[in-house]
Every structure is written in C-alpha cells, then in structure tokens.
Image (cartoon, rainbow, N blue to C red; front, side, top):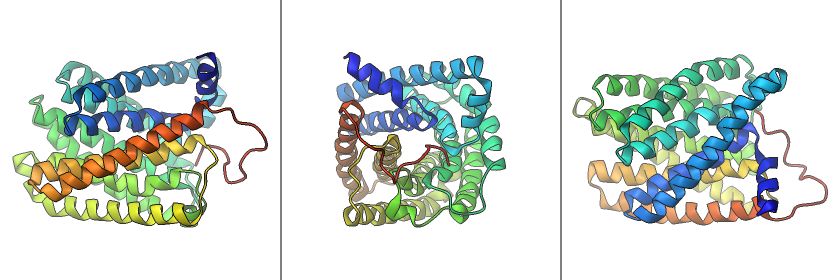
Length: 316
C-alpha cells in the first residue's frame, strides 16, 4: 500500500486530473448500463482522487505561487474543471443535486481563469492533444448544466448549457488548427483528447436534445458522435500500428475519451431510442474499463531506467 501511495504522489500533476475524469465517466457509463454497485465504487474512487488533487491544487497555490502559475497556463490545468464537472454529473444522476450544483459553481468560477490563462499562451501550431482540453472543460460545464436542468433545477441552466455547447465547438475548431497531427502516431496518450472532445460535445448535445426546446440539436449531435467514432477508429489503428507500451501519466487522457465515447453513444441511443447506439456504447464501455485497469497497473508497477523519449512535460 505504501508503494501505491508513493506512486500516486509522483503522478499528482495537472495532467493527473484526467484520472478523475476517466474514473468518473466510467462510473456514469456503468450507471447508464445498470451496474449500480460497480458504478458507485468508481464514484467513490473518483471523489477521493478529486479531493486529493483539489488539496494539491490549493496547497501548491499557497506554498509555491510561481510553480502553480507555470502549471495553470498549460492545457492540462483544465482537467481541474473537466474533472469537477464529470464528478458533478455523476452526483446529479445519484440525485444529489445540491452537491452537483456546488461543483458546477466551483467549476464555473475556475473555468474562465484557467481558460484565459491557457489560451493566452497557445502556440500557433504543433501542439499536443491536450490543446483540446479547452473544448472538454467547456463542454463539461454544458453537460453538468444540462443534467441539472433535466433534474428540474432551473430552465436557465439549459440556456447556460447551450451557450457552453456552442462555445465549446468554437474552441474545438481553434484547437484543431493548432494540433500537431503527427501526435496521432507519436503521442503519449493525450492525442486521444482530439476525439474525446467531440465525444463530450456529443454527450452535451444528447443532454440538450432531451430538453424539449432544444430537440433541433438531434442532427448536430449525430454528426458530432459520428466524428468522435471516426477519431476513435483512426486513433485505435494508429495505436496498433505504432505500439506504445511504456506508461505515461497522459495515458489517463486516453482512458477518458474511451469512456466518454461510450457514454455519448449510450446517452444518444437512450434519448433517440436507437438500440444500436446503446449496444455500441455497452461494448465501448467495457473496452474503457479494461484500459482503465491497465493504466492503473502502470501507476503502481515499479518503473526504472531512462524515461520514454516520446514523453515530455505534461503541459501543452
């Protein structure tokens, strides 16, 4: 157990927020497929990890402002927002609306600070997959706000979700212009966020579809889900063609898109009553669970030797 604690302590970087995102979205997927006990176990783990990372986030701000600022201007810092919204979404599905609203407030307060810091330090081109976290964090707000709207917490939340949904798509376009496509073959894990960002956009669209006045988003949601699945296939082929077995903390940014694509398919299939999408979502969910387990093995497995040349700093 001590070895696990030391291993996890070494992983507490901005990019490690993707671990909370991955664990939380798998919890959502397990809930949607009726595996409630397993879903709650994943939820408890996601909540504990969120508390650990939140404490580290605040502690670093207090004791080392310069290091906190250096981390805050990199795209992986936005995993703090995305992780908070994913956890809030799962709590809302558990009918803990007060806690979910509190997490939405926290995420909404942190989001503009980190988003502006990250965008101001964007490069024009050649960025890794973490650049798409500007879209993921924004769509995370849309998903949580729409979920709370559907839970009866206020129609204004639906309007806020729609605004974040549109802004998230615009940010995706900007990120795509800066993304280094060579990362599809060379990336250490976060290249998958290119597809995961579209998957969470599709999830936000499916949530909004369930709000009567936004039913017109059906076609847009299907297009987004189709593009997310196309990215999924392309990235899977690239992984098979250029196998990268060495562990990297950015592998959590692989698990999250796997789980998010599954949940987007499950959600869209349920709202639109398309059994094929629900079946696809179930299959993809268990793929995500398997990869989640493999990445945890990488966290606790003893590692030594020279670092992987393909892995650099976690920042974008």
